[in-house]
Length: 313
Image (tube, rainbow, N blue to C red; front, side, top):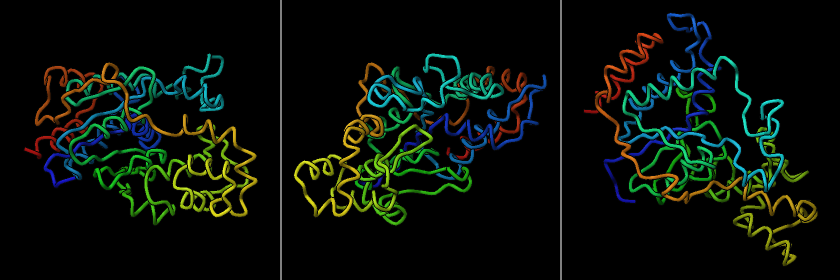
């Protein structure tokens, strides 16, 4: 992709506000003594990211469906352990003190004029992958979820800013870093490795006896998970080596796993329409922002965001 002055930043919003909730003390409260630690932390993260990486466009991507039906149909264990007790599996268990803060974040983003997008039936991961696929400029995907390493693509200037250790200690992942840390050459290979390795936090069992290093070795030989399945069909021991029996025994899982692990890159425009993601230099609705500040006590965090936005002008 040619050098461009435009840069799109895509935020995994839930990843950021969950981390803010757990990382900022719950002593950070509103004038009415309500917790606002997630709101304040989320805004501080936006201020830091905008100031540090200077995107020209930004979208806060949303989980309109945290556990999509098509993934559950492929693998019923997908995120099952994270469902709220006594519910039908459609509602995620969220800390009680976080739940009322999420609508405040929504209102503040609207008053600031920062774009927010989700798509019915899809996770934020799918929204980010689709927007990255559509982009006509370099893209920074901000997340604490390693599954999104699969969107890394040097040819399209898509990289991941991984915040697993915190936003201020984030790691920038391009293909060279994927190769160095995980031994896989690109994003699709990482997705295959993740399916083989499994992820208990998402209810993905993986292939028993196949760890990260062995999974990476198999994916380097096979190229993709589909290539590994072809090697099983063909009896290709140059790919499978001594590990043949383990993926063969987990064949049913490996056939279902891509439907769960692979992000959707082509959400239809009717569900994810084009929006103006241009970062504003000043708030879209100053009066609404002032009212939110007075109601929730957000002054210092809002000032940091406003300063970061204005500094781009």
